[in-house]
Length: 273
Image (cartoon, rainbow, N blue to C red):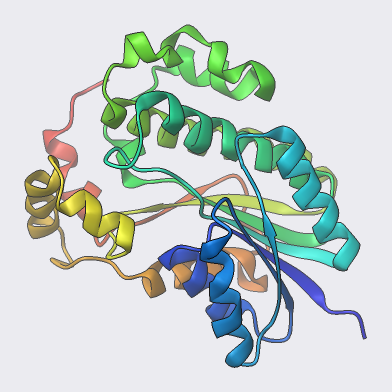
C-alpha cells in the first residue's frame, strides 16, 4: 500500500521533533538548504523511519517547486511542516526577508498545488509577530500581493526596516497573514493550512539568540510567562501534530501561539495600534 508523504522543510530541532512525532507509518521527505544537516536522516532511519532527502533553497521558486514535485512523485502529500528560517543573530536583514518572508510564501504557493485532499500544512512563525508589526493597511497588502512581488513592498525595504530584528518580527507577522490568505486556495483542494508561533524554544537557534544582544530581554519575557521555562522542540511538535492531524479538521487559516503564556503576560506592555 502506498504510504502518505510527510514533508519537513528545515531539519533543525523543531523539524526533527516533528518528523519523529508524526513520521511513523509515513514516508518522510526531509529538506534543508544545508546538505550536511540532512545527515539526520540516517538517525531517523536507524529509529525505523522511512526517509528520503532533498536540498532546497526556500528563497528560490524553482527550488521549492522542484521539492513539491518530488513530494508529489513519492505519493499522497498529506502533511507539510515548514520550519526553515533565519534568526536575527544568524543573518542580515536582506537574508531574513528572503528566507523568512519570501520562503514561506513560496512554500504556500507551490505546495498548494500538490497537497492531497484531506491534507494539511503548518508554517512556523514566531511570537515576535505579535509584538508590533504590520498596520492593517500593510497586512492587506501582504495578503493580496503576488508572492514574486512581496519584497518590493516599500515597508519591506531593508533601508526602512534597519535591523535584522525588525525584519524578523515583520516577516513573522507577515507569515501569519499569508497563511490566513492561503487558507482559501488550500481549501479548494480540500486541504488545510495553519501556522504556529513559538515562544523562546531551546533549539540551537534559540540558544544562539539567548547568547546574543536580545538574550537578556528574552530571559525577562520567559520569567514573566505563565510557564516560566524555555519551550522544547517537542512542545512545538505537539502543536504541529494537532494541526496536521484529524482532530483539527475544522481548523484552517489560524495561528497557534505556543509560547508558555509569554505574549499574554507582556501584552499590557506592548504598543497600542
